[in-house]
Image 1 (cartoon, rainbow, N blue to C red):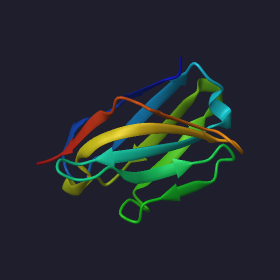
Image 2 (image 1 turned 90 degrees about the horizontal axis):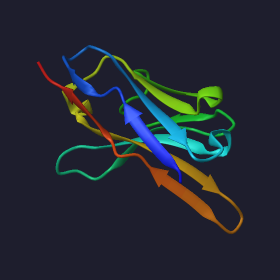
Image 3 (image 1 turned 45 degrees about the horizontal axis):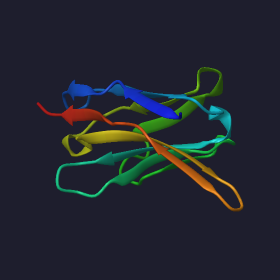
Image 4 (image 1 turned 90 degrees about the vertical axis):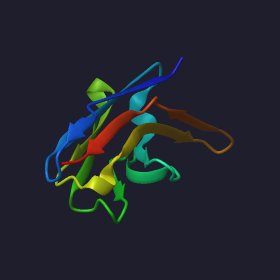
Length: 119
């Protein structure tokens, strides 16, 4: 059974930093493309950052230069370092693991970790 468990969310003031972690179990972590998504109240879930199995990265324009996604295959963990946080970053952050084959797609989600940026 594949499980994704996020941690690291919390309440911070504008300008502060947080690091989110997502530990993956039950599968071969290194072959999955990993992503962080977020969903703010009343809004749709949106992509924040992605890192492929080959370690290429992609970021939403709203977080470029402030957030950094990374992965540690030895620890089956993906991280999201969030700096210079803004109130508009407030959301529940979800970890996602995707593996796409020629005829299949495996898509797993964590339970989410809340991030609140407020003074």
